[in-house]
Image 1 (cartoon, rainbow, N blue to C red):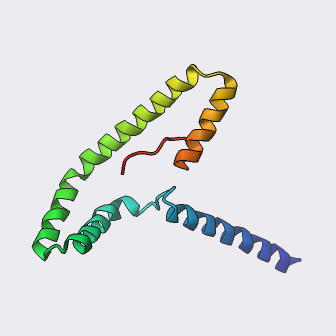
Image 2: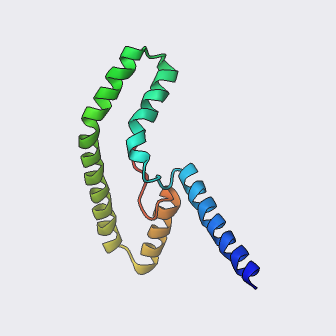
Length: 119
């Protein structure tokens, strides 16, 4: 009986980990350490695509680091605006339309109810 319980628990843990990895891969969620990696990943991407020199890489990293707080503040404001806009739209819809609207938001964004945001 203990083996069955352990196997069941392991199956649940593997399922959760697999689901989490899939959501990260699909960019529906971000791992907790991800925001700190974004500038580095962006610089690596630009470096590959634009063949940046080491000096250019350093400058781009400095620019991104300097602007990160402001970009995060803008992103937070944008998320709030989107949520408020969606709430206003939902107020003018019938209950049936509201249900479809929520489903549409989830289908389009895959993020639990937000329309896609610019990246």
